[in-house]
Image (cartoon, rainbow, N blue to C red; front, top):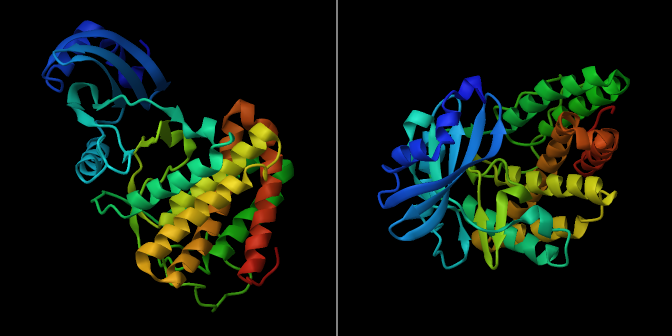
Length: 358
């Protein structure tokens, strides 16, 4: 058995059985010609690519399997986006893959496969700056698309993730445990200066602060929550936004900060210099904030959002400490990431004038 938690995976990889299951979702289906396991995270999820022969011609679809149950919420989000300006014929060429339906027996969500090159591969090239600006437009469109989601992501949630994961890194690398503890405390102190009533510090501040938030909170909107370059496929002048599993309500800064930090990490790991793609990061943020300013007509909103982006960029870099220890090829960069986190935290602390020892 390939996966005891996904006991039906072998069935999903059998073209004949797949043909029977997919017929309800693809009415013009004649035959499933191939079924290929593209990705598999044991005990959690799998991605199967099907090539189909239909009355309208040949096509390829992706079946996303989730072990703990059919992901109806993500399917609904993708449907809602598809119906509100994100379809394949969208005039702005900013799209999501077409959701086709559900295969409940296999805990599967089915969507059309879309072409394209992951933006991760293109950002370091000469088209990287213009691509970053285009990605900013995609993010702004998502954040201005009002759809219903089951969950909300807050600053408190982000801090909780760090509290859960950073001690794992400290246990693996006791020589860094004191530094990691200081990083966590610095994250908490920074968070006290941002408006999020549900964000409680995981470590008490050294001196109780009565300082008000530095800016009014940015209103929540639809966010991707796992927004980085691998989630965008570049298909000529069209961008496809994929993997909407974590889509929720939250600060737009979550997405832009996350994307920025991923560029920094990629730059460090692939180019040996965390600053090598800084112009891409700047292009992304400048284009995004310009779009926000143009849409709201309130420059103060963009100023406050810029600060939030800086915060979420740092928090994402801190989260990358744990990610780097889980992926063997990234482990050589963990200490450099730690140094980067310390530097960024210190710079952000100074820029918003947080008092207290490091």
